[in-house]
Length: 264
Ligand code: DGL
Image (cartoon, rainbow, N blue to C red; front, side):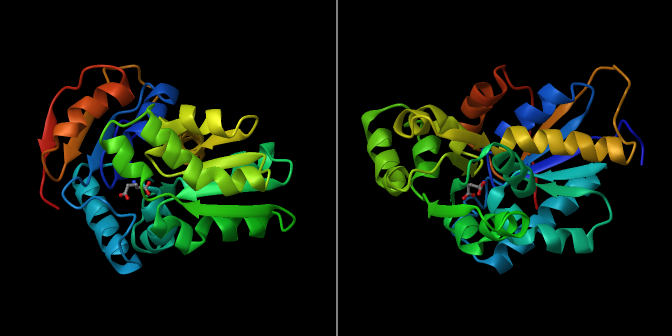
């Protein structure tokens, strides 16, 4: 494995750009290939079998791009396919769940709320992993299926979103959780609304945490790119997406170069 080979990141669509952003900020020397499976999004309401199949295909594409490691930015894939992927492939593959949990456990005083897609919440991946690490933690979880379309439609920051946030998080408020894990790629974009409704609750953004974890893994395998040459960020999608350019600007805070459409 050569150090200047890129890091591969995949998500079901555009949401994983939150992860790309954090990885790019933390490791500015790294080349990155991002793959968003816009032809087959959403993953969050699909079966385990299909999520595993899509995840394998996404990694096969990234391997053609000669990636040295893969960050599974999609929470639904991380919840249902990560172990399976690590059994199949030889390069390091990390997901977003472990990193988010470690951060939540470091800051909580005992009551954690988890939000995510139906696939993620029903898999109980977050719940089981938290209990494995600390049996005393009280865990509350809720799938929030309307959050992804709200974000995709740009309905962030309005009255409708505030009402939906209240509908989903009312119970967490009653239960007096002290920490909430944003267990879906899109949810960091609703952070303001969530923070406003759950005042005083610590918000854990898995995107930030997984970037730290990716760095640790690269350092561990001595794969970090130390050379300060010009880095490339390649963006690939499985279908054209009008939203993508708009979101890429929002997430990456700069104009986007070329977007390549590929077949998986
Ligand atoms: N990327 C997905 C996740 O983090 C959200 C969008 C989808 O359902 O595909 O779970």
